[in-house]
Image (cartoon, rainbow, N blue to C red; front, side):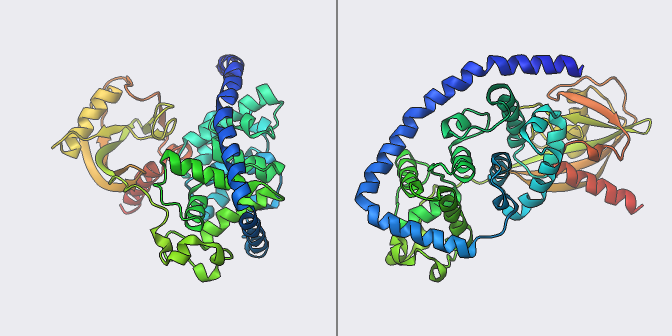
Length: 404
């Protein structure tokens, strides 16, 4: 079975060679525009930019945090760290980064790994498409780049899951290329420093931010310069109550001169997260518990969980449990007892998950909206790749059992 899967995957990767080249060509016009705008801005503000660069690099040399990925110039390790750090706190990432590199120390090891093993090591870090893309990108690197990350930012961006920010970070930090980066921290620093009042995310704001970042990246030590911008945004130029008195760019900051740095950057008001109620069932048959796997694409793609689904309007949890088991896994149960509920927040929704113990399942498993199932010993389900919501469910059930 593994041999057949490997052949299919290999075929897909070989056929993707043309797509990689096409994607690199498509990226060039936007990058060339950014470079041109950056050079034009550079001529107008060269003295000011030189002062900003010097102050940032001096400050970073004294105040940089000692983080594991800053102790290496290994492009692979830097790529892994930058992928993990997207929308995730540094303190959360550190143990995952260390475990990941211990288990998958190089591109080849990651490319050969089973995706389920990769997802299992990622469990709890969230945004699981990052793990799937790392696995796919490692396979592309083996097939098309000899297992080595390319130095060129365009070639990096042609890899699955590698966007403009990650390509710039890897190229500048690992290879000392003068490539810009713009993330949330850098956006905040540049918007305040240069008084950018255009709403973040609009084309005009995006072009200006990347042009300024490109201007700053030109010069010695572009990797340190980019990390200094991110460090300043994380530790001094914070969203609320920025520590302006401790900022090395205080005298250059337009927002500080105006007296209201917290007014920038300008962001659109976020939509309120949608409230969703769902059920999850602990379905026991002859001492084994049913686990189901989510489809590869979509929210928590490829992860394992207990069977269930969303409540309909006005539907009680027990009725929803009986219905979703029948509709989505083909089983009828004779009893469903509510054990409790757990709450979990995703980016765009708030989930309340009602947990039920289901007895005497009848029928044969027939999946709808799931990709696989397993009957497992009760203690084994936690070893499968699963998300934080499922971890909360298992903790609730374990605590309930321990209290009996």
